[in-house]
Image 1: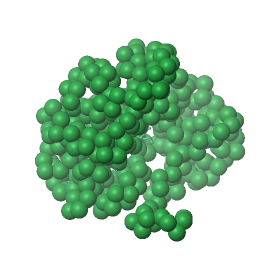
Image 2: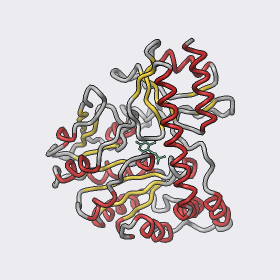
Image 3: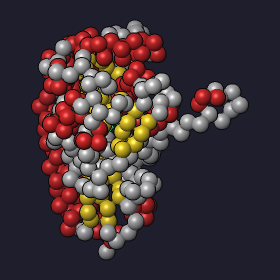
Length: 351
Ligand code: PMP
């Protein structure tokens, strides 16, 4: 750290993204990307938009909001697009936390929440998961803080039913509840319709997983228009052109290509369930993930040991050196061929 770093940032611990190796020698199952390329229509749209890159992008993302409003059935002024969903999560910490208002989230959840809280000087509390890694919605009722909840949760993949999400939202009428639905398209029921009923709910979503656009960086939030107004004030004060032209066009294309989107989600769900059956056969235990990853523990060796053994054999998964989950690895669900390769490498390691 240089001697010029501002005092308020001297103690931050930045988020550590999953490894992004530059060579193609690894089977990459560590950052929950899609194994499928972006929709061909999305790519055509992005290529066309590239011809206008001399011009700034539309700061209001009007075309994207129009299409999203139509496809998602929510009002245009209740949607805001961002540079990945990490950006809207950070904006939510800036807009709805600080001073007296702290944040609350699960002890094992998306690591970015604690990082964003630190960055913004927000006090936070972690609520322990139950022994089976599930969330008890009663723990989140009337907490008097801004609630951040990933549904399905990461890295467990466990899903809360919509009724439990509604219980948390209605149980905190004077605080914002942020529901992070990065993985909702792989088998969950979205809380989007509840944004019309509750003025304290912000649903955050991403094009990085189910829409195969992780590299384009596109996320969004849906909420009551007053919440979106607050978030826009933060966005316009930090980076008004936060979504570039090509990404915006790719997003429109991806939203329009529903058949491609649905068929890819369906394949991931099938591959996930196949992988669970195979892991079971090999003696692994795992949570009932409804996301595009499985969170699994090998009875015969530690989590870190298995992560290193897999890496040596050219398979990258994600291991968290965090007490309570250190025996587990998070494995992204890829194509059937990729999953077959994973299982055969695992067979070799544990035999
Ligand atoms: N939420 C969760 C739970 C995630 O796992 C991720 C991906 N790391 C994100 C949000 C952010 O994704 P992105 O910024 O690519 O939209």
